[in-house]
Image (cartoon, rainbow, N blue to C red; front, side, top):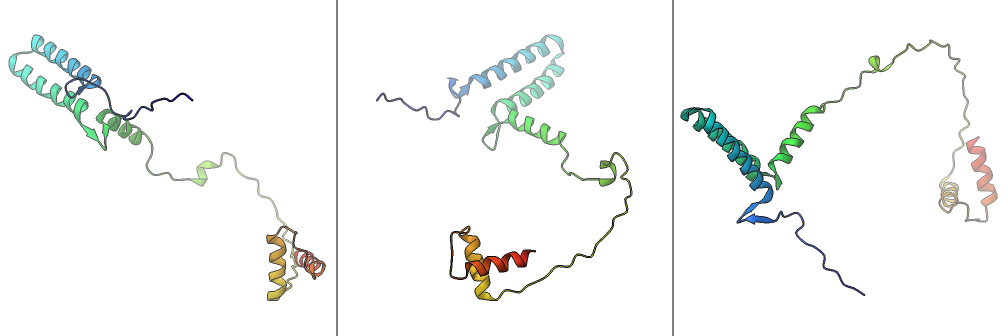
Length: 152
């Protein structure tokens, strides 16, 4: 039988430059490009402020982990949570689209016969029910007859 090596540490991103992964490197390249645009378009004080903001935001996205997951997953989960309502309330008045017709109900007096079983009969009936009818004791006909009388 042919043996295969099972990959381990599949959740670890491969490092390309020292401790920096490919995702982090691309995020830092985008930040450097935006800082270059800020350098060419803004005066020096505007460039410094914009560079600090850009580096802070992109550095957070590139390097910060929340609960062992990258920061952008945290932001996506946060946005999805904010879109969903946190409290669900059922308003039964708005749920009914059309009004229900008022119907006259006739309530009949239902008379139920209650037969009380002593402990031995109850134990035998429960044994018949538990064994799904496989138990055929000496009083099984009487038990089943009393059971049908009890249910009707």
